[in-house]
Image (cartoon, rainbow, N blue to C red):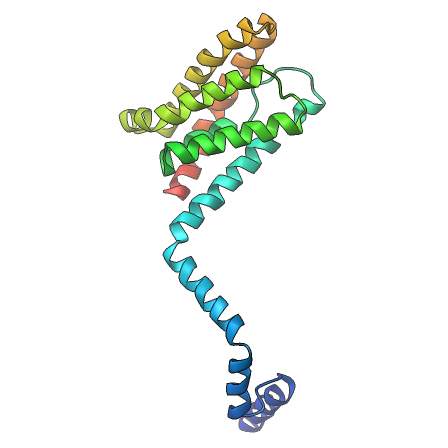
Length: 204
């Protein structure tokens, strides 16, 4: 009974799948589809040799998207709150993959966030300066502290120390600036205490 069932399955496969009726037809199928097969093999080879680069790009894209989406609430809530995930992606990418990827994640993430939330102004360039400072120094701080929590909190404080005077010089309200700094530090203390350690273990 089992052998007959297997023969029936094989017969069904040969009859239903085009190009597999016999060995000659199978060879002809391979020749006809040689370009598709070559492209598939090339993709597998490239994936094997360049997986590390692809992984970096995927992680960067993920952090950029999360960072940009995390600030969408600014379209409807006109209060300067420091609730965002751009700092998380910026610091983690800088530590795991280097300064340039971290800088790209921070810059692109913030740019998209400001455009999507319709808040792109001259003060945004002050934030870009803060992001550059964090991207360039995060690895050094992490090497000294050996703690993603401590590094993230220090980077948040440094970032706020860079941008707050710039915002005030450009005419931002002192109360709104203070509210942003306080909520930004509190939120990132939580983020780097509970979320960042898990993500860093995954990335490294």
